[in-house]
Length: 135
Image 1 (cartoon, rainbow, N blue to C red):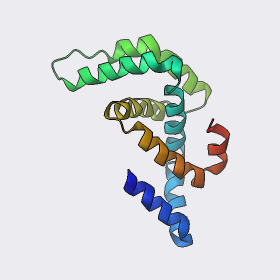
Image 2: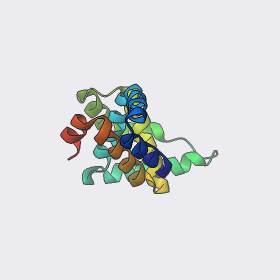
Image 3: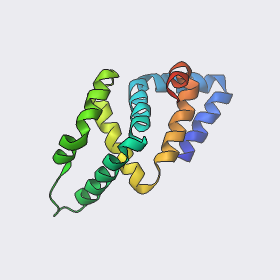
């Protein structure tokens, strides 16, 4: 992830490269926004119990013999996320990908690094949106 951050940092210094980075970002703008907003939603104090349950289920899913309990987690706490994502007009597939990406990253401890890189990229290539939603 650090290499990606460095690569985008270079593009900000050189106009020709910045144009290509902007084109690349534009292809993934909706996905980046979904990942950004989902991280912010997931990392609130009231969602901590849900995150911990999701982490436990993810660990179980790594063991092929363990029963899959993702459905019960969705019933127990994902409904409010789905409702929120719909209200925020996030693509449901992108939001679903994002929530499980962040759960896995929180398990391996890289979630803050990924979020920082995403924030850095968005602050340059999606500055208005970033400023509106950063806090």
